[in-house]
Image (cartoon, rainbow, N blue to C red):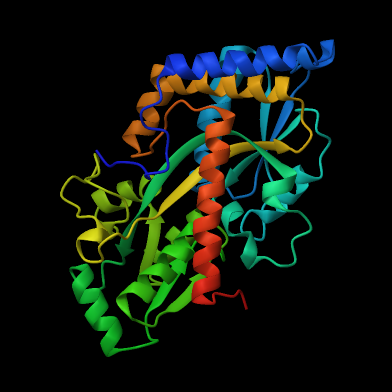
Length: 333
C-alpha cells in the first residue's frame, strides 16, 4: 500500500490521541459555557468549496453522513464553489466562531501566495481541527495518447514544446502544482488548462479536450480499470493497493512526491471545547469499519489525529508550496 507524506502522523497511538484530546477538552471545559458544552444544539453547516464529483465533496459526504448518523446531529454539506475553493474558505473565515459553520478545506489553502487578492489569511483566520485524508495523483492520459511511459511523455514534450494540453482541477490546486513541479523537474513546457474541480477535469480528459492530467487516485482508478483512461505513474511512495503494478513518479524523478490533502477547519476564535469535541467526533467516525474500508478502497490515507498535529502538517505544507511557488515564479494570469 502507498505510504502517506512524511509529515503525516505515523507513530502516534490512538491512546496518545485520546489522552491529548481529553487534556484539551478538560483544559477548555473550565472556561466553556454551557452552550459550548452542549454543541451542537442545531444543524452544523459544512462548507465544501468544490463541485460534487471530486475528492473533497465525496469524502466530506462520507465522513459527515456517518458522523450525522452516529451522533444524531445534523451536519449539512453546502457547496460554495469558485476560486479553487477560496470562495467557500473565505465564507467560513468570516463566519461567527460558534461551531455552526465549518470548512472542509483542501490543498489550495497551502498556496495562498498565489491569491494576493484574498481578503483572509488561511493561517490566521482558520483553525485546523482534523486532517481527513491524503491521496496521491495519477498521471492520467487519454487512450489516444501514444506514449506508454513517463519517459516517453517527457521525450515527446521536449520534442514538441508548448503543444501538450494538461488539465488541472483549478488554479493553485495540487494538480496544478504537481504539473508545474513535473514540468520544472523534467525540463519541459506544457499548456495548463484549469477546470472548475476534479470532476470537470476528468470529464474533459475523458472527452479528449485535453490529453494529460494529474488526477487524484481515488476518483481515477475506476476509469483506469475500465480502460477509459490510462495511468502511467503515481505521485506517492511505494505501490497503490488498487493499481499495484503502477510505478511511482519518483522512479524517474527522484524525490518527486505530491498529495492532495483534505481537512476540517473552523473560524479563528472558535472555543477550544468545540474544536476538541468536533475532532473527537471525526476521529470516532474515521474508526468505524464502514468508513475505514471505504477510504482504504479508494487509496485514501487516513488516520487518527489531534488538532495540534493537523496544524503542524498544514504549516509544513504551506511552507513547502508557498516556497516552491515563489522560487518557480508561478503566477495566476
